[in-house]
Structure formats: C-alpha cells, structure tokens
Image (tube, rainbow, N blue to C red; front, top):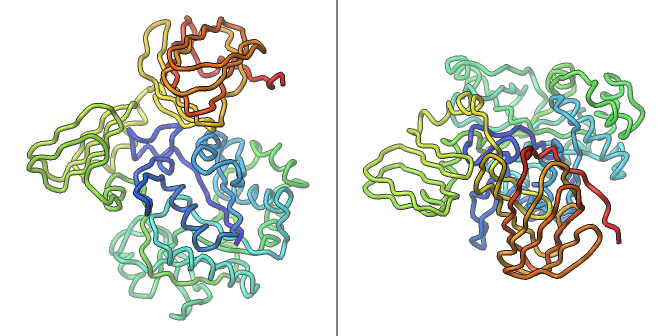
Length: 437
C-alpha cells in the first residue's frame, strides 16, 4: 500500500501535554504489546507495518513537526512537508506530487489517505487494504471509508450510500448535523465520514493540475504559500460523481479531547500520582513531582512543563479557547536528535535539560546574542567547538561564547544541562553550518 497520513494541527485540546510544537499525536500515552509507552503516530505506524510490512508510508505535515516525526519513527519514513498551512486539498496534492516525483509511485497505483491519530485496532488497517484494492479496480474515482455510526453524533459529516452492500456507490453527502437530524440520517443508513479515502494517483494529480498551475513537485512546493486555502472535500469530493463507499464497523475513535483520550487509556494514572477515594479520575503527570488526588469524581488532572490542568471531565472539552489566550514559552520539544525540556527562565538566562540519543548529534550552529555553558550530566560523546573536537563525560563543562560554532555528538545517550546567558535569548537566534569534516 501507498499510505498518506495527514498530520496537522497543534492539538491544544490536550494542553498541557500538547503545544504549538508538540502536537497531540506525539504524546506517548499508550502501551505497546511489550509494555513500553508509544504515541498515536507510533501506534498507527506500528499497526500499518504489522498488517503490511511493505507499505510505503508518507506523512503530510508542517515543518514544525518534522523533527518529532524523525525522533519517533526514524529517518526512513517519507515526509511531505507543507511550507505553510493551506488546508487539506493543497496538502494532499503536494503529497501526491511527492509520491509521484520523489518516491516514483506510478499514476495507476492506488493511494490511501487517512488521519494520523485514530484510535483503532488491526481490523481498521485490514479495511484500508480492502479500500486500496477497491480503488485499484478503477470502478470509481474515489473510494471512501464509511464508519458505521454508534450514536447520532454532531462531530462528523455523513455519507448516505445507495445500497446496504459492503461496497456501494454514494447517493449524497450531508454536513455535520444536529442530533435530531443525525438520527434521521442514521435511519436512512448513513455512515460517518472519517476522512479516510483512496484513489489512483493519476486522478488526484490531474485534479491538482486542473486547479493549480504547476509543473512538478518542486514547482508546487515553491509556490505553495500562494495557493488558495481549500478543503479536499470541497475541491474534489463534492464535485465528483463516481464515488464509492466501503463500510467499516470496527472500533474507531477520533481522539481529539481529554474525554476521548481518557476513554482510550488502559489505566487511570500515567506518571507519579496517587488516587484516594476517587471515582472516574484520570491523571497524566510528566513532572518529577507526585500528584495526590483525594475524594474526587469525574475529574481530569494533567501536569507537564507547560502547565497544570485540573478540570471536571465535561468541561475539559472547552479548553482550547482558554489556552489560545495564554502567551507561553515552549517548555518541551522533541527534536530529530533527542529532546529538550526548559527547567528555568530568568531575565538574562534560561536553563535547559537536553537529551541527545545515542548515535545522534545536534546541528552544528552558532548564536549571535548569547553565550552557552554545557554541563555533561550523564553519558559519553564528543563536542566540536569551532572545528576542535574533544571527548566529554559526566562532570565536564564546556563554555561557548556568542558567535562560536558548536555541536555535541552522543556515543551513548547524553544528558546535558545547558545554561543560556544573554539579554536576547530567542529560538530565532541560531545559524546552522555544515560540519567541517
């Protein structure tokens, strides 16, 4: 299969675990079969490879998520980078051009597109293979997955098929309704539209050329910021007559709020927390401090470097507009080489704990407006400062003046306490260089 996973949004509905850099799909909150923790994107990627080990997976995402994707999935996964946000049609058009021009996927090959963050079981990915096979037949230009509704929901659009067969042509689409209207749709045999569909690559490539003036992937990438923001549903789906839908009746959850996330958690506590005489209480604690909850009912508690949330379960879904008003320093982020966590911010200084994964290294870079001091806490590796290399071990201290080029390479996992000193400390004060050897 050729699979495009749409990975967008900042996921602020799961604050304080998510922020502008760390989207919800990168939060390691689920258990693997081996008992380790994994994120939504890791879970979906693992499930795809379990069902189809040869699947070619491409993630369509913004440049702010690239480091986290490489951190969690490695360097081999394909990434179609959106230079800026332009809604789902430009994103899918760019990913389709990427598959064709960069990955060498032929125009007659089928492509499956789905969100990166559904909570599903293996039967979902078996259904994706059937969707892929149906698209390859060419009976329809688009083949959608229609999810059998479990209740009259206002969250989803509805697909009304022409028959009750497993695969049917589509009669009509309905926008997100109110509950009473949703009941009528379900009585007509309507299915939820979960944003999962398949097509032959050449079909979407032709649609892209009809609506956008471009020659190839590189040209489309270069002019991406000039494209009109438009959804794939509006640009393509609503204007297409030859559409089929395949039914899916397995477990499918759209995890976008604290309520839906806690429904998928395998235990009520993640991290250091104690519950005493509590009912329906969930705690996710990323801090090195204990949380004690006593006598609570229907409450969600979450703590991270970005903040602390204490909410009754019902109110937790209304968090986004509140968080949007907060002016926050990013306190945690995953990078391709590891991760960093901000420990302290003062006028003229910032203290960071950086973790560099074994075999990885930071970019070779310099800062114009700040000095830096690295204290090696654990692990072994090497630092390069202005072209000079030296080994480092726990207890070593390395000082870098503003303007000097520096990087650190980890032979084993390295933990580094980084002190930044200067009147203008900013993420934008960074210039990257090629290593000199």
